[in-house]
Image (cartoon, rainbow, N blue to C red; front, side, top):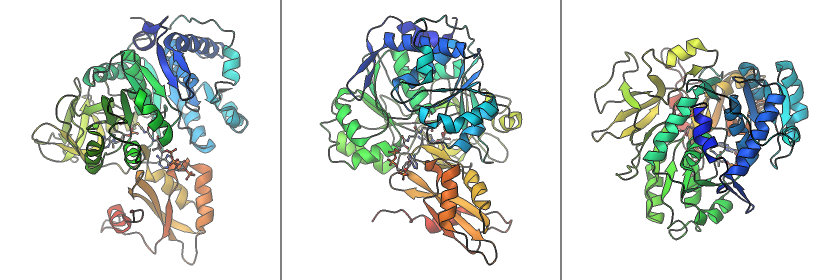
Length: 505
Ligand code: MLC
Ligand code: AMP
């Protein structure tokens, strides 16, 4: 096949007038119209000087046009690099420079602020607004509606997704065509997706979950999506009656359960709810079944690997577990010290191997070698066990990571910023339980002798540099950080002591 990912997900739908996207305003976009738009974008990117293999960084609001940018990149052999819309200019600068992106696509409202950075990085700047207008649309307006798909191998890169790191420096995970396609194929079969499915899509499309899991599956199955700009409770409840399936992070489900309009009748016709990206509390699983009669299907994945495990479609979906390794994915539990495989039932590091596992971190051979073994097993940094029935349980993380509403936050990045603030000697950042986001960020500061750090000014400094979801929801001054005899900060002590900060009434 000339371009396996394009041909299998997109090209096969050419000329199809069936709906691909149902929009919040009642409009519909057919597969054919979507592909014609993507082809025009592909021409515009080529005209802007992009060659196959070049990176295109996109910080754009969720819209049908934004999804067409992904399709255009795949068709033109360009590596798609989607970025969280919440990232600040400081954060974007790192991604654009580190990836040597040839083009930065952003919202028109941010263009003036970002242009100097893009120019300095040697990237062309184009704009795409939420409504679909901008310099990209202008450039694409008179372009042909078909594009000669650029041939690619399964091993060629399709996307770069940045994931934060324990050192505070984000890593660009390189995902190949085969990584994405193999996972979509497995999931369509495992979750029994078909052309009759209508997926309620309220996730962001700059992460694996909303972009690859949700979108690629629907494309491969030839179904349709109700494509909402974001998770808005009223809209989700209004659109659920037309959907057959929904994918979400746990926050989606706890928010729905908090709303009396979310009833058994509202979702009686649904065939599947899936959850992932963060732990689904067993109590949410149980409450969801009691309310709706549906058992949420929990699965486990990550940016570097796409999806690794899933509870079964037909068999028992066990609360508090992430199910079985997916077909083609090998999963083992290893001793964190020796790397030896542990016997069934013992807790250790979760490692995975399969066609879904990424190619490595962009320009970071040492980091890649630390996490991706020579034999192909990827060390996920999650701790877990396999129970006597083969279900995988995730029991913690060896990586210092906070997951807030499905977004990953590495404490180190925030600590580096806090340590730099006037009057601060040192800091520690931990995640504590939060009723809506699962976990949220708390920062602890130790003042320099005789100084009183200005917490408002520190909050403002965080706001300037970091995306909103990373901001500490609380800053607390301590005389000293708890340390063990080796001098290592005991974050577990802070988590235990301050774990009730956001507890409900
Ligand atoms: C938004 N805010 C968040 C936040 N999302 N803060 C912390 N954590 C988050 N996840 C900010 C907002 O900017 C706002 O700031 C305030 O918090 C409250 O906003 P909100 O209106 O309640 O937030 P909302 O826009 O509704 O977003 C919450 C959310 C969203 C949970 C719906 O974050 C979301 O869609 N999350 C999904 C993330 C995801 O797709 N992850 C997949 C990663 S892939 P202010 O200033 O108003 O207070 C992956 C692999 C895998 O992990 O296995 O899937
Ligand atoms: P990301 O790097 O954003 O792709 O996040 C991946 C991480 O999310 C994994 O390493 C896990 O720690 C976490 N994760 C994903 N799915 C689940 C799940 N179902 N239960 C618990 N943690 C999960």
